Length: 140
Image 1: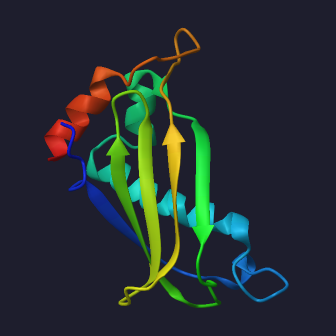
Image 2: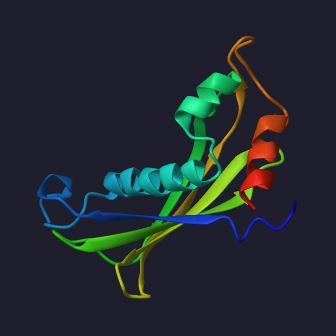
Image 3: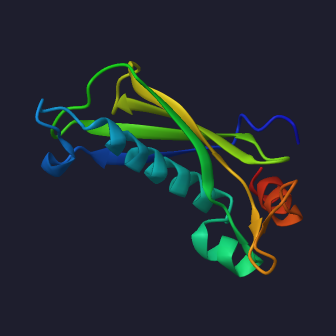
């Protein structure tokens, strides 16, 4: 289960006016909103999105996020957001690449790290729960 590179999902978005800053490009914080769209597509692919997480008794807060801004995202630009599962053993690490739809040039890239919290105990888990591993295996 070490090779997770084939577990990817893609989401699509068009940059709305309200995501722009005074310089007429996407405000840097909104990149994480686009990452979230990619993460949702990936979690749906493995059948472990928010409702399934809650039902399993775990929450998965983001404890780390990083973004490298490479080119500006502009109004009405059509985006392709690709999310790739990188790690699941002790944490859920997902990488993201945003490109303009149909083009290979990266506009931004980054990652997020989430950890499992046992909701009954309100404690962070030292390893990812078995439910995540089962969901990933089933999605292969």
